Image 1 (tube, helix red, strand yellow):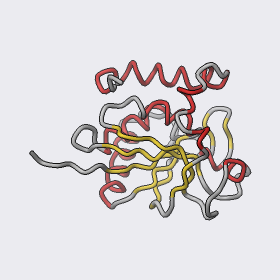
Image 2 (image 1 turned 90 degrees about the vertical axis):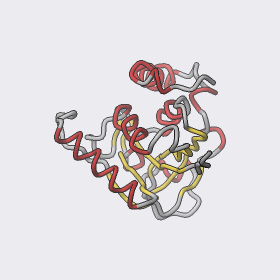
Image 3 (image 1 turned 45 degrees about the vertical axis):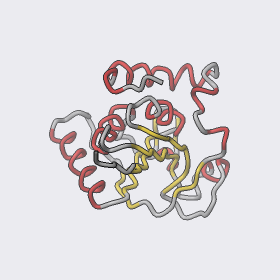
Image 4 (image 1 turned 60 degrees about the vertical axis):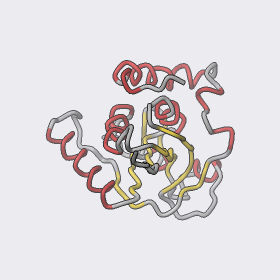
Amino acid sequence: MTEHSNETATLGGGCFWCLDAVFRQLNGVEKVVSGYAGGDAANPSYGDVCTGTTGHAEVVQITFDPSVISFRDLLGVFFTIHDPTTQDRQGADVGTQYRSVVLYQSNEQRDQTQAVIEELTRERVWDAPIVTQLVPLTSFYPAEQYHQDYYANNAGQPYCQIVIAPKVAKFRKKYLDRLTRR
């Protein structure tokens, strides 16, 4: 039996609460941590990132088993659950911290992301050009504890009901065969 080591993906597509809620449900995903990456400030707080001056994006760092789900599969979900054509915004969330970004950790992740973006562009999946940034991961800072698994812990909050719940429902319908049985 071959032993598989987990890999990590770091993705930003608007508010990290939405991404966190979806990726936690995928079979093969071992852990999801909401956090900040892509900027210059060390150890930023949520308040710091919200100012838009740190350069960081709200991201999720996903630890996954590549023998169960591939990085490319994660990208498929990622490009389904957010709009990669809007510069520095997702819905009502506006600012550089809400940009679409893939922070790659290897040349393979970079190349796979470029290939997926080229395929989506060729297939004209989106009416506008994809503006997702593709940059190397230099540092990742976990967000404060109350941001972790936010949707599950705050499902009754209006933002969760109005913004996150519809994204989760759309995702579950499309990826029903990939969901965990947790």
